[in-house]
Image (tube, rainbow over all chains, first blue to last red; front, side, top):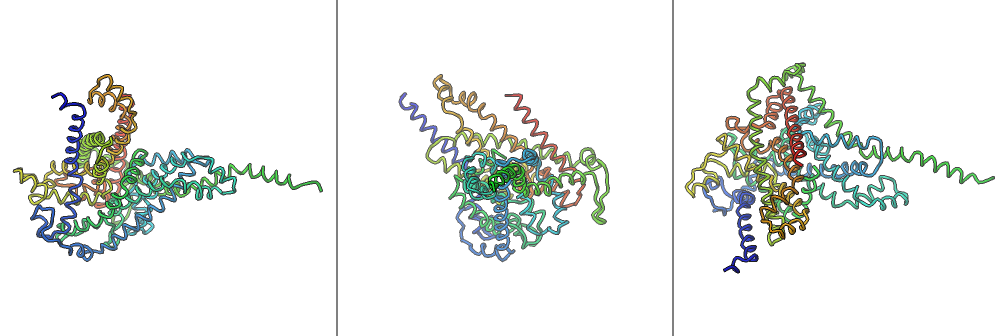
Length: 284
Length: 307
């Protein structure tokens, strides 16, 4: 009798209970995504009719109509090229500044660091109104430039700068000094030594920056107004009938198209992606 | 002839040594110049501007700004009943979201910090909504939470419960948005907790176990205190994040019903970019900044007192 409830048995029982508990808890995390894809294949009539995860009739036409209803391909491309630009520029700008803050001695170095940290304390909502008028003055409203510039230099870019600084600080100094002996300029040391050695940090910054830009909502909403300038997050809720009611089958088909590539990449590189977020979460 | 070459070389070396520091400083400034320029143009300048805006009233037709002193702040704090309603909503949102989020994050982390078959699978699942865009997440949940025909209510109907029209009744709408947002973001806090749990040396727990400590005692007297710094960071980040919630509100309820989910960030957006009350919206933005600052400082102070 006692053997039946021995410690090993107990551990197995508790393991099973945990697994069941976790599986139940996982439902609201996974199910909406499955339901989204399945509903994206349903017809407008079926979408509220059958609570079945397998559509009665797979309506591939939804995924065609998504592209004819509004310039969805263009909007998709907008999101893609904006996110890629933001990521590329952030990598350069943040690793340059991060390197200077980590390695170079200059008057004002700690002041620059202090100012950047203080900027992190201020919510973006505080500066977005003046930034709107700034962009307006330069004729950049309804263009993509604000969506590229603001994240690069906003709190997000600052977090990236500090992540890079932290990583550069941990690199062995000797390699860089050897580079200097060999006649490399500071820029050369940064480009030929420091950057190649910091691939993990660059990858982390790239991942969080890309996703942040890809998922941005408030900024596109404020700065962009024409349909062909929309980014994905804005476009998704824009599939409506003439009275403004959502055309759910199209919204969910479009949402699936926007989410699935990200999720596929996530499933392949989940370890790296989760670690990148952990890194930025602790620092930010 | 002598040999002038070494002396010139020495002089050159000394000269270059003298300027080495200056040169390094110059290069450093080149390196940081994009960041500093961006900081001045897109942060420092706008910060000064928003203070100035908050003291003015704009006439959109004539495009004229008029200095009105603290009228916008007085308007918000003492005259406009909307303001306190909005602040109350934001507070309700934060009070509902932060403990729910943190308890769920910690529970999941405790369950997933060890090594067992499937642990990676579960971590991947609970983190998946974090990489999903808020827009997509909000749209899908809005769909699931539709009135009678919505999936959640159809599910409830099968067990004989008539679910409310979630997003059309003020209290339910608030609860629904909080729930949706927690599920979306909890993975991030879970990961931070897992990292902290894994950093705790095993010896502490083993020593306590030898003394006959129960699971709960180990958690209460060893794990929880050691998680303190992480808990503080998570609490600050999550609280600030909850005051900034915008996309879920915009897409799921639009601030409704009956302004039941009209929170601060959404109110600022409406005032600034829909009604173009630029002065008033700027004052609101500064008030929001103040609230976030006060909350952060208070949380840090409480923590410092406790440790």
